[in-house]
Length: 250
Image (cartoon, rainbow, N blue to C red; front, side, top):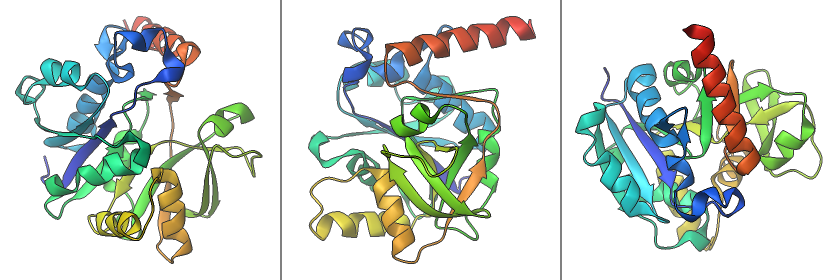
């Protein structure tokens, strides 16, 4: 296992669109075939990416996450926690709060509500950061509405040339997922964005800003199943997919 990569899981949001599930349960703790989604992230990072240390950014119902995972020893990793008390600043602020734990290492940022099943996402850890400041997974999809709920990706070969959060129209069939491999130096630029007067910033827009300022951003072609757990329908779809996958393998 390598110590050159740290996992970052922003889990501060309240999950309004996923109610009623999120009245009593953080959406990252939603049981998908018996396993909380954040636990799936930790296991994926640990086993697929060789990550030994994870920073979880807490906010809504953060105590339940802290109580479940503790120091991470029961899950084969070391877990640090940080509180986001400024949710109005956007989820890029949650990412920035993990900066003190990076200690010069590169990071894998994975939102708590991203669901991956039978994918190659673990391979992204070994790709790209020698040539790119950021690498983002992309997947060709048929449903344009999925892209509009997430973000669109335009690219030239492996190089990403534009990202648009919640686009009104889609330039192609490429869906972007809120998981990012980032070089350690990216945190400095993110910090500078807030110090420069940005009061609110989502991380997708920040990465697009990096592209416009001359940074190289790469793409990683995802295989397998991906669902953004952003509402009741998507949560139920993830549950069904995970159960089907388990039964098919039994």
